[in-house]
Amino acid sequence: MADVRNEISIALVKSRLQFDRHQLDRELVEQPARYFEVAEQAALAQSRAVAAKEDLAKTEARLYPDCAADLEKRGLKSTETAIRNALLLDIDRTAAFDVLQRATFEAAQWQALRESFMSRGYMLRDLCQLTVSGFLSSDSVRTSSVDVKADAAKANLAKKRRPIDIKDYE
Image 1 (spheres, helix red, strand yellow):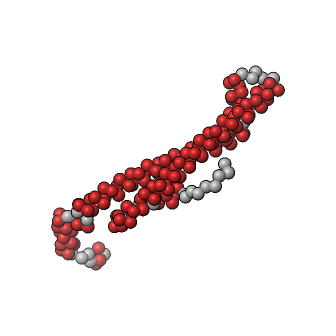
Image 2 (cartoon, one colour):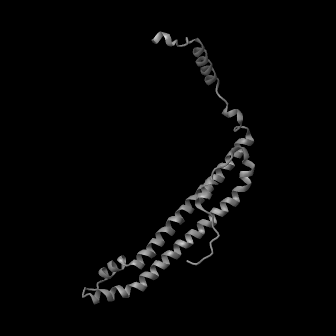
Image 3 (tube, helix red, strand yellow):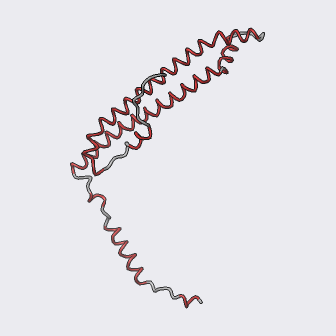
């Protein structure tokens, strides 16, 4: 495939899935552009997978007569099954199949990232609604009064412990 690729790496896109909860306004503004980048890459990857499948079919069609002739030359029956088996073992067909496998895997990765960015958009929307309504604020992550009392009791017990004197253990 001799196409000019304007693509970004999967690792870079994965790192963009995370967002800063304290910068929801910026994240909300950037979400559509990020989703478009991922959706575009998913479409390109899907297109490459379809092209690789077509290349595999063309390779098999080109190799089929050669496999049949090779079987006849070796004195073997050139049945459909025998030709198909010989075709599966051909190096050119194997290479084309490997290209198809890689392209299919890449397309699946981009599709998964596309779905993740779609979910990210819904999550950002919900977090913005919670922030605006006051349900999501710094007050919601404060320590509970039970935790404060438990920490105070631990500190009080620590003060009452007698220090260890090494002479007691000699």
